[in-house]
Image 1: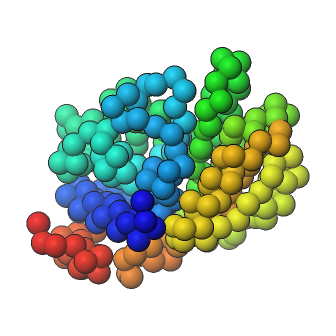
Image 2 (image 1 turned 90 degrees about the vertical axis):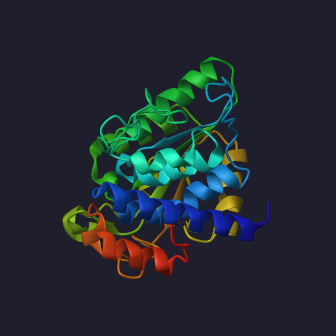
Length: 275
């Protein structure tokens, strides 16, 4: 697939995110839009080994969205990948819908783990990696963390465990957009420097522009194929609210859905056709 095609897919995912959140009247646009290119590279750039027709295949690669509030991005990607019909997306956060505000692995095909309580995803991913190794499987596990989420102590306990166990089938991606619900991460409780922290815990570290899909595919594949007895962390520099001018770099759009007028403006900026 040509990279220009990946950029088109990423834009389509952003359009779906805005439509879902506008329809729902609640949700998290900022962090969903910031990680869209990362998820696009994983699922459509030939990185993640999965089969939407057989989502429980034992030797599949796993993806865990530790920052579970970015569920709209994951749902849009899973629908695009064929796990469920795209028309289901408009049920986001509605009664009776499988698409809850945070991912539910019991109700949504393709969701590996129910997430939402921040700080837990890396621990779960580390446990899955250890289990895969015990089972003799060579599958990889990718986990996406928020940078504000990395203020949680459990993240670093898991990082220590993963390095100690030499889990080189584990790739952690930090969505480094610099903002959380209360503002600049450095002012709330500074978790920097991510590179040096992960290295100090025994990880290999790569950095990438989180909106350059060519580079994302290259770095993600490098991390997947690098088997040197260490887990790998990828620090992906992103922009919160990426793609919508009035949402970009604004902490106020962490957990606030656009109203009808704002949704229409966002969709126009993304070049969406009128529904």
